[in-house]
Structure formats: C-alpha cells, structure tokens
Picture 1 (cartoon, helix red, strand yellow):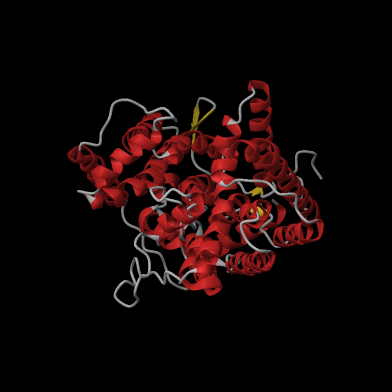
Picture 2 (cartoon, helix red, strand yellow; picture 1 turned 90 degrees about the vertical axis):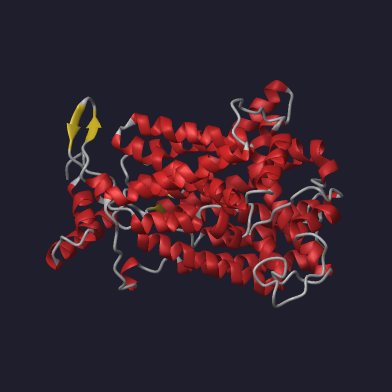
Length: 483
C-alpha cells in the first residue's frame, strides 16, 4: 500500500473520540457555569446548587447514551445540524436546569428521559437513506435561480429602507437591546419585513458568501458580508454579527467538501469554552464567557427547564396564540415567551424564547416535545434529500445559522421565520451546475471541479444515464467506506 493512501475510517476510533469529546464538553460546561456564570448572573436566575451525584450521574449517562448513536462523520446536512443541536441545546437542557434547581427532581428526570427519547428518535430518523424517496428533484435554471435570489434580497433591503430601519452605524454589544427595540417598532408597521430579514440573514446571505468562497468569487463574499452588516445595524441580531466568522470557519474546515469526523464538533465547543475562560481569567471579566457560553449554551438550557416549570403548573398554550387560535382558547394575556419571562425572570418585557423542547412542552406537554421533534426529523430528512449533488461546504454553510437559531426557538417558528423553509426551497431549486460547471482557482491556476461533483450535478439536471448514475452511486459508496 502506498504511504500516501488515505487512512481508513475506523469506527471504533471515531466513536472513542466522540465519547471523549462529549465527556470533556460536559466537564467544561459544568465548571464554566459553576465558576464563571453563576457567580455573576445569579440575579438572572442562573444560580448554582451542588448536584446530587446519583441524579447528576444518571443525567450524564443519558447524555453519553445519545452520543453513542450520533453520526460519526459530518457527511450530510442532518449530521451537522444534529451535532450543533446536541452541543448547544440537548446537553445544556439536561444539565443547567438541574444545576439551577429550576425543576423538582421527578420532573427533572422525566424531562431528561423524554428529551433523550425524542432526540434519539430524530437521530435515527435522519439515517433514512436518500434513495428511500423516489421523488425526483427538478431544479430551475441558473438564471431563474439567481433572479429569485436577487428579487428576494431586493424585497428585504427595500423593505428595510422603506421602514426607515437602515442605519450607517454598527451598534456596539451594549446597544443591541435599544436598537432591537427600535427595530420592533419598525416591524409593527411592516410585518412582511419581519419574515424577510431573518431568512435573508440565515439563508440568502450565507448562500452568497458560501458560493463566493467556493468559486473564489470574492465580490460575492463581500456582497454577502455587507448584507449581513446592514441587517445587524438595523436589527442588532447578535447571531447575524457572528455569522460572518462562523461561515469563514466552516468554509475552511470543509474547504475540500469532504466529510469530517463528527468529534470535531464537541471538541470545538470545548475549545470555545476553554479559550473564553482563559481570556476572562486574564482580563478579570466574565464578558467573553457570557457572550459565547452563557448566551449560546447555558441560557437555552436554563430556559428549557423554565418553560417546563411554568407550564407544568399552568394550562398548556395549545398553540392558541398562533396558528390554532381558531380552535383553542388561550389562557394568557401575552405569548408564552413573555409569560415565562414574567414568572421566572420577573421581567414581563423580556422575550424568553425557548427551543423545541420548551416550546413543545408549553403547548402539549411531553407529547408536544415529541411533536416538535418529529417535525425536526422530517426537516432533516428533506434536507438530506434536497442537498444531493451540492458541495458539502455549501450545504453546511447554508444550515449553520438555522442550526444555531433552532437552539433558541421552536421548530415551527424556525420553519416560517428563521430560514428552514427557505433553506429547503433553495436546496431543492438550486441548479447543481452553479458549482459544478464553473472553474475553481487553486494555487493560482484554474482547474475544473472534481468529476464526482460534475457527475452528480449531471444526474440532478437529468442528463446522466441510469448506468452513469449507478456508477456514481457505487463510487460514492466506496469513497464513504474508505474515507
């Protein structure tokens, strides 16, 4: 065997890395919360109580049990989304409510078992192979596709301009809440813009940036980044501000559009937590840890328990404040996010959004968690189906922001306003020739894209024969086995 041959993919080694990474992430999250978050944010109910070893050990066992069935490689969009949600939503939802004693022991354990069952079901559903569905995807022409992107963007930024929300100054992190309140006032008179802006920020702009990076068309990268900055200046969505470095990191990691070992995700979060803690220790401040760990992990986990606490004692919401308002009576004066903020945080003006577990429980109890998990499973299966033939780097960048927003909002809301539906439409409609027929600039010379990419695009455009598609499938299967 040649010394340059790729190392075989060993499942036992990959599983060990995943297990070790997950366990290290649990430890890092625990100590970060205990020593850097709870002492400074107890006023926001982020308190710390020493855990009972038996109960806490059981929670950790459940977390690690899910890690054993998680995908070992990041080869499809569902793999990436599952790992991001596992790190920023599932693990914190199992740990933080118990450390804050938001729930009683029985309810805490019940929630942990339900979350484990629901998320395990999503993991298994995402394994459904693409060829299980016989429906054929019909893409549009490149001209029609990019015209649609341009018209969508024109509607978004035109709506912002018409609403008077366009600003030429980037707000600091201390100004975001004031700017966000002003933007909410703008949206009161233009609700359509409220739907367009998140989809533009989470899907359209990342698509433009990702395509520019993949094809080395730097003007597209600049246009996409400027589009994100305009939205941040207008709406002060912090996730939009972080989108640019996140997209660049994803582009670097998946620059060869090859699957990566999934252990990369938990170890990456361990790195973020550790580096944030070291910077805070050097500067004698909790701000960096607060910005990353508290905002993206601790708070979503805490709010899962907070929503279960509030709606376990009061009547369920039954989506009566939303699309089921004609069928059920709503027992509260404000939407659930404000109800939770008023009762738990003592701040009725705060919008305490929850993820699919908290939102699902608020509406239909434990069965609501299963309901929203089932919707997520369908979305992931469709994403896998629609993404065939698209370079992995593009697909991951298209879903990275939607994955992060899912940790802070319900699946229903994410579908309508945070990019999931638009992302699926983009995947299904995108002509694969956008990425396959263009030449790539590598090391100062131009070279054509890999034959596998071109062949996959050809099969999606309907020009490949049955024999060509069969050979392509065999090659892809062999590469996955050896990769």
